[in-house]
Image 1 (tube, one colour):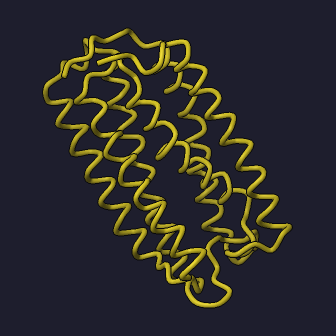
Image 2 (cartoon, one colour; image 1 turned 135 degrees about the horizontal axis):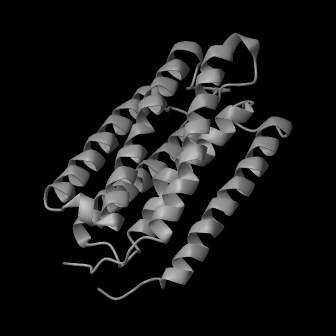
Length: 217
């Protein structure tokens, strides 16, 4: 397979992607809370969680499937995740901001499907690999597991939205605001944010400085 990114360009793209998501998170948070945009106000922990979701489910998968050091079997889980999330993005944005008929249950079903597909293909790839001897492939496997784990709190957050807010019709609410009434879920979100943020530097270092693998079809 031809190299889409040199290793140096891949590093620049990854770090730029992280920085870009961080800046976009700040802009989104300020805009959502000060401009009375559709969906209502949003707490900082929820804005950070949204940024993490975009980073882990869109940006990093796109970069991983561009990494020619990884064999096709190891790029497949992330390619499938990117496809499923891209399809969801198009449909969900329409439902959120045009038809106003989005239900958190749609998100829960899609999260479960993404988790199952990601882990299925990751374990299939691992079955044919001696992970102890393949540093980069081991990193990809661990990252696939970590990426899938993020869907678990996301499913709970979607259920919380269904139980506590009206997400359809006029004046729908899509985000949890900074309110004492929602302190428990905001604290859980902050813990999930912390786990993702603490994991990220170690993953980036292991991936971007990993031993080069010979890609196989």
